[in-house]
Image (cartoon, rainbow, N blue to C red):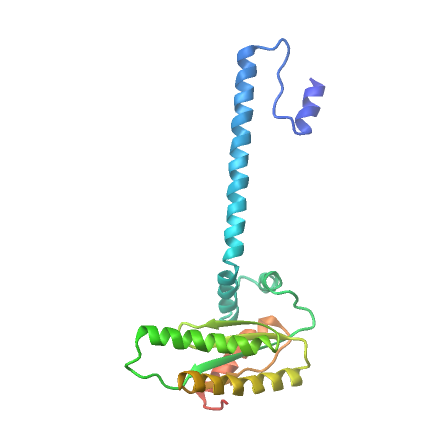
Length: 212
């Protein structure tokens, strides 16, 4: 019996005492088979979910960024953990948020034209942001393009590069879509939890007409 107990501890499914009863042996094998099949299905389901999660990581990352910018996170530590999960590094980085806002929208714009315009604004912003550092560009519920940037440049150099890129973004959007945009830039920060403040500052800049 001690050997049987040791076997169970080492991972054996069950044990049968001698003399072996055929029916008991058959039932034990059936239960073991069912358990193995159940675990295989579970493993297969988890692998499938992991693949789908990776395929939808961009959506999950965008949702996290929007929540972070709005100050929606369960705890500071949780926010930092999620940021480390989605970003390569958070050490010795500077962060900044800027907002691209369409100045005027013609009433006769169709849904397709508006979607193309917003998609184009996001892509143009993303292209220029890629030259600065790791970034996320998201479209807010009110149609603003919000960009979060991470860069290891000094705060002064970081801000200079963002301002220069903002002018390029404005010029290209006007050239492609014949629309003008305003860009509000928040203050750089060294803590991801201050990105919501940087975003608020960017929106205040737009609100008070102190934008580029």
